[in-house]
Image (tube, rainbow, N blue to C red; front, side):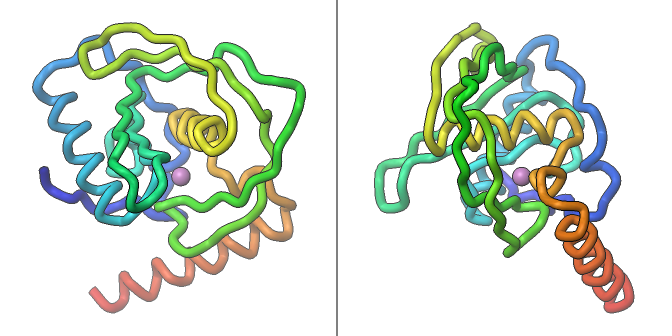
Length: 173
Ligand code: NI
């Protein structure tokens, strides 16, 4: 289960529309394994395949609290089929925008349809951290980042900062 390099802002891959998975084969299982390894190593609570450079509708998540037992969830072709009108503000971060956190308002509750690693369909209701995390990750599959919900001023400032960081890294290499 190799840890993969993360795709970071402002890489344009993060703006791609990811494609549905048509069936779970060896390659998809390996992708999920690698994503869990990468997510736990970071550490993070959610990861979309595009964040390791694969534009497929695959998400890994574990929103269990640290020190608790692990609760890995693999979501294949996740789809939010209902969202509450009631909203909730939570602080979010993203492994593609390391060490940047900001409050985002999203629907408080959602209904999620997805397929598991055996391609079996499920529908669940989620609220709290799970609902926020699912919405954040499904956004990734559609090329949307949490900074898109911030004011233009804040967003521009973040993009500028990470563009500068990426340039510095390129020059070091
Ligand atoms: Ni993210």
